Image 1: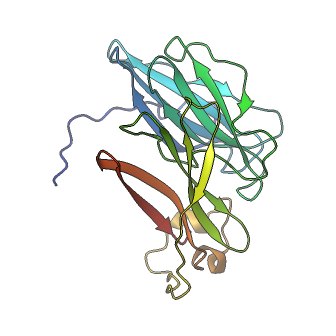
Image 2: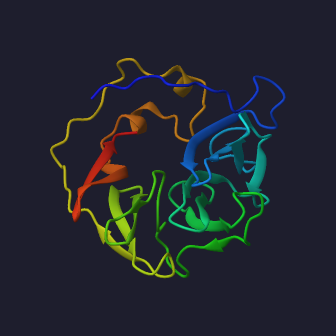
Length: 234
């Protein structure tokens, strides 16, 4: 498979933004042709001022970014846009770090101009349910399948959350993958951003340690045949 560059557009101006760093963008195309992009941004990954920002591509221009989800004193992470039918969904994480964050969501019925009141995806669950970073899969049977993962101090674990009633209830299933014989990473071609403290985790020993697998992405090659791709190490 070959990829070809069709178009390249700048969503954010080079200067004049209200934040220092932005990260983890998500993109969805609505039936009307509008493109919607979201990301989290703030002083740095994990800082208390991070929030979820959004822009729409309409009439051949990206709109001025708007802050659509924020909570005083709490970091926001990893937005995921999803448009299954008549409503735009935005899932995101809230919490001081990846070990304690929880999943919240908002919805919009007007292409992202206005949003519902934020709500937790699954009440009274200590796990970060729903999508962790990548898109939900709308399966051929109508089910919503959210690829998720947990980053505990002991082990990274991947899972899927499945909803058969359009997001009202979710059932979690962990990926039965163990990799105790994995080889730790090396510091070859280490990103300069690590040295500059641009990540929430900048300890080299921790970054290159094998912890498991996280952040899965899903696709359905034929009805009922769903595949998963995951990442390992930090």
